[in-house]
Length: 106
Image: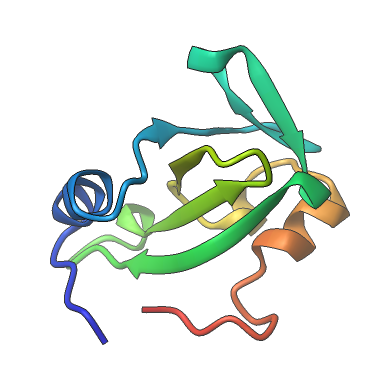
């Protein structure tokens, strides 16, 4: 398992070394790539990696980093500050990003 260090270090490694150049935003039923004016439903992207970061002293510092590839080839990152249960998202999106569903975390 590769050590990505901190959240910011992991983002830099994934962007510079692994080609995840875009930043995705999480909406309730899709993810959005504002720079390209595109959005993707859950069946239009794959989650390649999930990296979890825990705050040293405060549970509110927890974050999850998703490395995502869309079916049309855009690679990018999605950061969720509190985990998927923290926001108001659809059940379908929650299932897609679920850490427990056959996806090891790194």
